[in-house]
Length: 106
Image 1 (cartoon, rainbow, N blue to C red):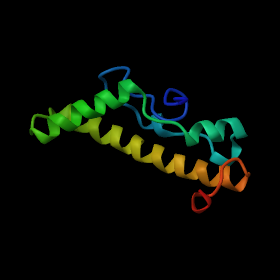
Image 2: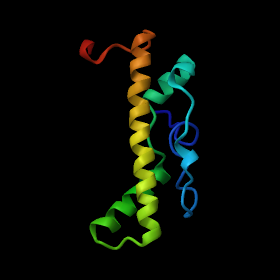
Image 3: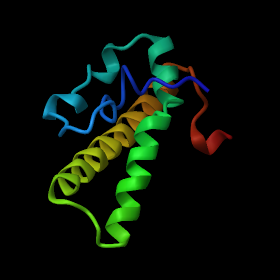
Image 4: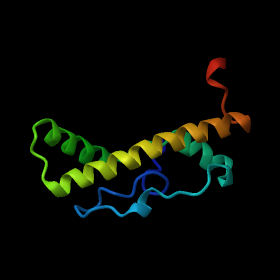
């Protein structure tokens, strides 16, 4: 499965510093090519971002998050949620363009 996390989903996880708000800004879904739409439909978190999210969530469950980690977790979850919304929007566009069947047709 193609991972577009470096380009279209998440750009955090490469460093321990706080991600800036521009990390989640992406082009309009409708402006993407068919190939980009399909890739976005299949996109997922990078292994590095998933590992960072898992680590922070584990620390949160154990009440061991440092203040800077709380911010990292909030930013990572925000980008994750936005990525899920973009995947849903991409699926909608893919169906409209005839690239994917509607879910009720599966």
